[in-house]
Length: 335
Ligand code: EPU
Image 1 (cartoon, rainbow, N blue to C red):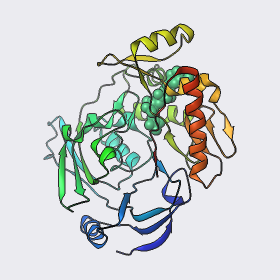
Image 2 (cartoon, rainbow, N blue to C red):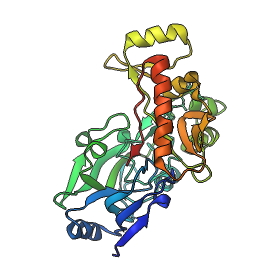
Image 3 (cartoon, protein in one colour):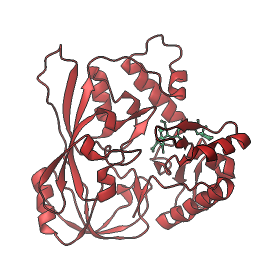
Image 4 (cartoon, rainbow, N blue to C red):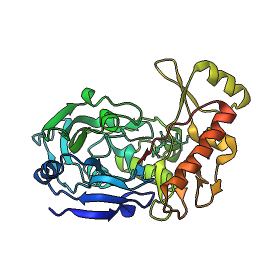
């Protein structure tokens, strides 16, 4: 495996910000990955999968690891009558190609997560979610390498400490995911969970798994910008949790405010709605702006400097804070 010094990271983050990595490598298997940890024990380390949820504001003074570890195997003995199916998928497989693989074979559980950019190994890091499903619902186990010891460690679903766009892997930065073991089902039945998707499928009496994938792709294509044409990192902020009192008082002024009561009594509301009502929908400052169809997405119209994104992010946060007294937290990781 080769090491490259002073590598430009622009093509390794979907926002296309420029930054130089001091050292860069692309291990093709677990042995090579372990070797690069041993070769550079004292460097800061950053693992980049597809680079779809991060951007840079400065050069990276350390080792950037961009794994290229591919492969997939079915773990369950292939008895057709068995309802459950287990697949171990290596970290660098493309997420949506894997979802398509499952849909084509009728393995159910991930179809709502169609067309999300990125790699399989990145999916558990931020517990990707869409249309009422989170990837944690279909994960049995995550296999990772401990950066500090080089040992492999296996995490059960509970040990991953999944939360909304969160996991132990996002919080600690200590583990490099090498594979994910999914638990899927051979039988599919559509469960209505999300308004946009239900509407898209309203002419189907009993949507098939393929119908659901196609409907998700249509909804996403309408709402979300193509990162190749308009660099972005998906939803920029998390949807905020507010108190029931605050939600009740906001709904008086904004009857359309989306508000979902959570088990803990807090209310989850919509960052897109708040940004929109704060006057920041489709707004552009210099080369950075919110996407006109979905203001939760910040898009890059041509800046090479991540600091421009941070400057714009602060403007959006201030506008929402001033209008609603709600602090929007970034979902994207900033380096
Ligand atoms: N809205 C507006 N104005 C707009 C657009 C939306 O007010 O211009 C409001 C509407 O009330 C709408 C609500 O925002 O009902 C929700 O919009 P949407 O259905 O697009 O979902 P979201 O909450 O903004 C979340 C995820 C997305 C995921 C969708 C669909 C987060 C941070 N984002 O967005 O995930 O695709 O739901 O399930 O939870 C991502 O994480 O990168 C991502 C794209």
